[in-house]
Amino acid sequence: MVEGSLPIIITFVVYLIGMIALGLIAYKMTDNLSDYVLGGRRLGAGVAALSAGASDMSSWLLLGLPGALYAAGLVEAWIAIGLAIGAVVNWMLVAGRLRAYTEIANDSITLPDFFENRFKDNSRSLRIVSALLILIFFTFYTSSGLVGGAVLFESTFGLDQTTALWVGAIIIIAYTFLGGFLAVSWTDFVQGILMFLALIVIPIVAIMDFGGIGPTFDQIRSIDPNNLSLFSGVGIIGIISLLGWGLGYFGQPHIIVRFMAIRSMKELPKAQGIGITWVVLSMTGAVFTGLVGIAYFADAPLDNPETVFLEFTQVLVHPVVAGVLLAAVLAAIMSTIDSQLLVSSSALTEDFYKGFIRPNASQKELVTVGRIGVLAVAVVALILAQNPDATVLELVSYAWAGLGAAFGPLVLFSLFWKDMTRNGALAGMISGGVTVIVWALLEGGIFDLYELVSGFVISSIFIIIFSKIGAKPTKEMQEEFERARAMDKGA
Image (cartoon, rainbow, N blue to C red; front, side, top):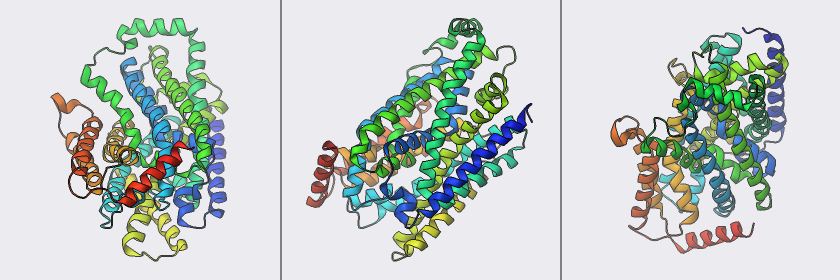
C-alpha cells in the first residue's frame, strides 16, 4: 500500500458511494425496457457527449495509451491521431443520421433492432448474428476494463489481482444492474469530467515540476532522439494500422447508442461540440502523459509502462488530489465496462429473450432479464480477465477491431447508401467479424496490418457485392431512408 493511502481510500469510498447513489436514483426512473437500455431517449447534450467519450476511452486512455507512448515514444501517437479523426467524423456524420433513422425505423432501441427494422428482415438473421457478435467481442472488451482495474488496485493498494478484479466488478455491476442506461449515462458524465481533468492536470504539473516544456523535451531527446519522431521504426503498414484505429468508431455499439438516446435533434450541435472537444483534448493529455513520463522516470524506469499515469499521481500531488485523480482511472474503467455490460445485456434481452423465447413478455419481466444478463456477461468477463499475461491494450485492440469491422461498414452503408439490402448487411457483418478472428491468428507480411483495417475493407466489399445480388430495397425501405435523411438535414 502506497504512502498516504488513507486519504486516497477515503476519496475512493466517497466516489463509489456517489456512483451507487446515482444507480439508485436511476432505478426509480426505470419503468420499461426502453428506459433500461436507452434511457427513454431523454439524454441532454452534455450527458450524451461526455458519457459517449467516457464509455469510449475506458482505462485505455489513462493506462494503455500513455503506456504505449512511454514505452515506444511519439510514434504511438498515430493511434491517437487516428482515433481523434474517427471520433470527429463519427459525431459529424453518424450521430444525427443514426438518431433520426432509429426513431423512424420502428423506434429501434438497440443496434440489432435497428438492423432488422432498417432492412425489414423477417428472417431475424441480422438480429441473431449481430447480437452474437456483440456478445463475443464485448466479453473480451469488458475483460480489458477488469484487467485495467486490477492494474490500478495492485499499483495503488498492493492488492492481489483476483481481489482487485472482484472489488471493481462488484461496484460496476451494482449500479448497472440497478439503474440501467440512465445510471450508466449519469455516472459516465461524472466520470468523463474526472478523466478530462486528470489528463489535463497530470502532464501540466509534471512538466512544471521538471522545469518547463523545454527541459522536459531536451531530456526525452537525450535518452533517445527517436522518442520524439512520428516515423521512427515504423513503416507504411505500421502507420496505416495505427491510424486504422479510427475506423473502429463507426461500429462500437456502446458509443453510438448515445447518439440514439439524445433527447432531440436540436440537442445535436451542442453535443457534437462538447464530444469533439473532449476527445481531442483528452487524447492530447494522454499523449503528453506518456511522453513526459520518459523524462520523469528516466533514472528509475517503470516495470509496467501502463502504470505511468498511476506513478505520476503518487509523486506529483497531495494524497487527497491523488485520490481524485486515481478515482478518474477507476472512472475510466467503470464508464466503459458499465456500457458494455448494458449493451450485452440488451442483446440478450431484446434480441434473444424477447425476440425468440418470450415475445409477449411484460416490461417488468424484460427489465429483470436484462439485469440477469448483466450478471451473466460480467461473470464470463471476470473468468477471461484472470489471465495474468493479458494487457489492457491487447484486449482492447482485439475487441475494438472485431466490433469495428463487423458493424462499422454496416452502420455507414445503412445510413448513407439507399440501395443497400439485407443480404449485403448480413454478408458484410459476417465477413468483417470472421476476417478479424482469422487475421489476428496470422502474422508476417500483409498480416502485420491491424485486423480492423483488413476486416473493414473486406466487409465493405461484401456489402456492395451482395447488395447488388438478389432483390432490391423495397419501396418502404427507400421511403424510410429519405425520411431519415430529411430529418437529419433539418436538424
